[in-house]
Structures are given as structure tokens and as C-alpha cells.
Length: 293
Image: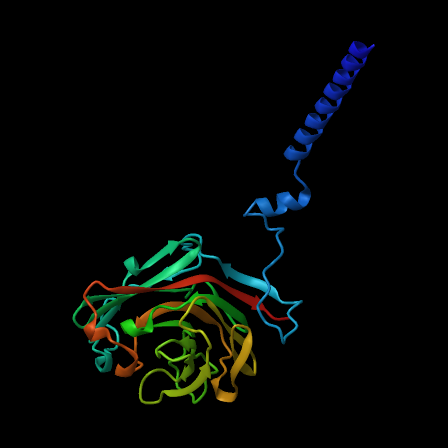
């Protein structure tokens, strides 16, 4: 009797074990519709990114430009390549500086913009821009950036440029240089600037300082909200300053991300003491532009 019971228990145990294994294999190999949506990085059904703004309703905004910088996309960007030195910065010991293509690279889902001391008074930097590739009028721009080291004599910048900002008419209606930020100072602050009427004798500029806690450590988001009557600057989702009136462009502009030689003054850099070959890098995790309905 014991022997028969033992055989029966073994048979039942084997049956349940087989059923469990078959069920487990079926579960492991199945994929839900939601899983498929997010496993394919190229799937356009993934939820669109939302801006990091807490004080504004963005539910009806439409994402019209995005780069997460997994690789260089020539349909979106042109890499800067200076043929002549840009404006000297004698106050910080830099008499020549250039944008060079080799100072732009991509790593770990970031755009890398390198600033390097290549001579006693010479710096090479990196930049990319969207002129004739992506230009727009009105929207919200947001970029997540870990800035380059200011002390090396460089500044990191997010800015816009209009093709006809050199037209002199007393306003920025026909285009402006809009510097969302330029990190030329070692304190926890930066400045935005709007330039209109070109760069000659008729140029006008409006500079605004704003506080940026933690700017020199890790990633932070920089935003620009632009509509027909105002420009608003945001840092880590918080409103910082506003431009109105003659400072607001009424035409399409293009994006620019760059590092450059600092204009912050000698108290904000130790470039002359640095060794040739020393460098610093700005890292851009993403940039996005939304159309506001």
C-alpha cells in the first residue's frame, strides 16, 4: 500500500512540475503592448517629453524639435569651425580663440563641447548651431546642461540668433542675439543678454543677472519662453527674468550651443596659470523646443 501511494505522489508531483515549467516559459517569453512600445527606442508612440515647468500649463504644447545627442545628426546641426580668431579676451589672458570641429563629440548620450588651452594665450572651443536646418518663431526651449569649468577661462552658452539681426531699426523685430545664459562667473549666478541692431555703432544690449544655485555642479535646465510680446528666462523650471518691448524678435531664429573664451574678467579665471593641454567640457543631455498653442 505504501509503495502505491508513493508512486501516486511521484506522478502527481511530476504533473504539477511540468505544468509550472510550461506556464513559466510562456510568461517569460510574452511581451505586452506597453513593453513593446518602450523597448523600441525608435517607436514614435512613446509619450512625448514634457518641459520642466511647474507654474505653466503645458498640456497642449507640441514638441517640434528634440535632440538627445546619441549621435551627430547633420540634418539638425552644423559644427562650428572658425577660420579667424574670435574676439580677444586680454583681461583673462586669451588673445586668440577658435571654434574647432574636433572640440565637438558625442559620449554617453551627451553632446560634448570641449574648451582647451592650446597655447599660452590661445584657446580652442566647441559649438553647434541650427542655421538653415531648424529655425522657428515663438516657442519654449529647454536644455539640460552640465557647464564647463569657468575657472579655465571659458563660458558655456545657450543662445539664439536671427539672420537679419544686423538691420538697424531701433528694435529686435527683425532679429536678435538672445543669450539665455553665459556662465562666465564663478559665483552661483549667470547673465542673460539680448543684442539688437547688429554689433556696430548702433548696437543695443540688455543684460540681466539672475541667481543659479548649484550652477557649477552637475546638470541644470535652462529655458526660454518666447512669444510675440515677451521673452522669459527659466532655470531648473523656475522663472528668473523677462524682456519685453523692443527686445522681442518677431522673426524666425536658430539655436546655438557652445563654449567660448570667457569675458568674465580676471577674478573669474586662472587661465594664465594653467598648463597647455588642460581642458574642460560642457555636457548637453538634451535640447527640446515646443510650440505653444
